[in-house]
Image (tube, rainbow, N blue to C red; front, side, top):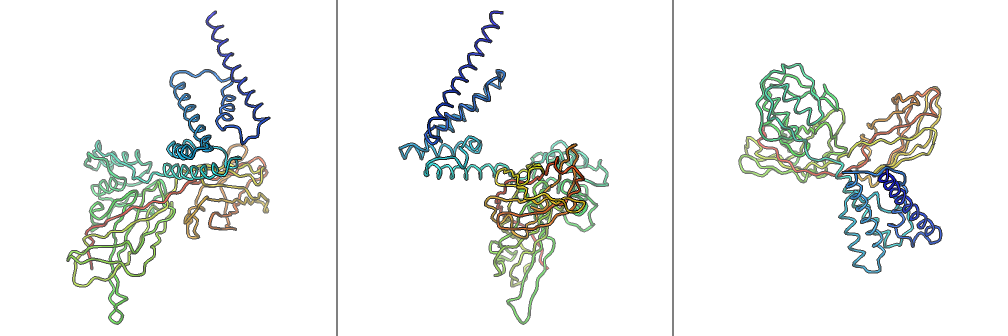
Length: 466
């Protein structure tokens, strides 16, 4: 009993200490202008409020909480040092904040906090760099690694690919078809191609969806998928046809066009994908150099979440002589890749409500009755959108949108209309059948909230010429 009483007294003493500390800080905040109150002191006090009345953690929780509080204390100290009278200390504090990584973002002062001009500028640089780092971390630009070291047949192989990638396969083939195991991990498309070559199957992109690939028997003369393709990042590139054109009157119109099928992992649909013409180059089997046409610019590649491939025409100059194949054709794929999908939830009873996650802001602009339906006008803004919201980018309109009714059921949109489109955002009017439950319902918008540029070089080998 004595030990219990001692423990209780110790716990209450700690609580009294935190309360006393909080009272002192509140007095300071009430009597001293906020600009003179150290950021660390203020946040430490409010952190203590969260701890009052909570049970005492133990074991790993103690270590984790101690590490978190130590990290927070370091960040707040560096923030305070951004106002140091010594230039060297201010520079070192900014470098330390950058080195702390994206986890430091939640401990930085609010963007509208009252701070000195120089501190505001340094914090703005830190926020920009850490948000960019967080966006890059959210986007996995590397191909999914597939292990086929323990497979014996088609069923085993497809199951292993599905387990690692989340992509399912629909087919009518015999799952007992033998498939050789592979010791080393493979990129997603390389693994798929090795399996399909052994099972004599091909991908029918039009028969699946964003989570499923349809597999059909391949035509008799279809060459090996592995031997025909190049694998780079999340992409698979395969030339499908070559056409040469010689104009006997205007030689400047002579051309060689190579059609390439570009496919990507279904889990990661590029928002914008282009191939710069000027960066195309090749080598022919007679030793001559293959050059791109002088048109310049970028070749846009259409992307769609429901179909994980597109075709692109690569414009090249018609070579002289009689080469029989392109030994190598190289270029660069530029893309904007989306980060993780996150949910914005806005109660319909609160018009003009808005929510910001990472670099995206979603705001309700109006909710009104339109006959038997409701029209919900929504503004979506993206910080530093760049090319992500160019008029031909349809990804923003393919995001999941629904209304959650008061009983928890989901109501899908019946249609939408774009009423505003700018460089940084769009305004979309969605229509829903909500009955009489609009005031107690919630609008839900799911979207990638960060977008990062991605550039990967490619080399395609041994393309036969006509």
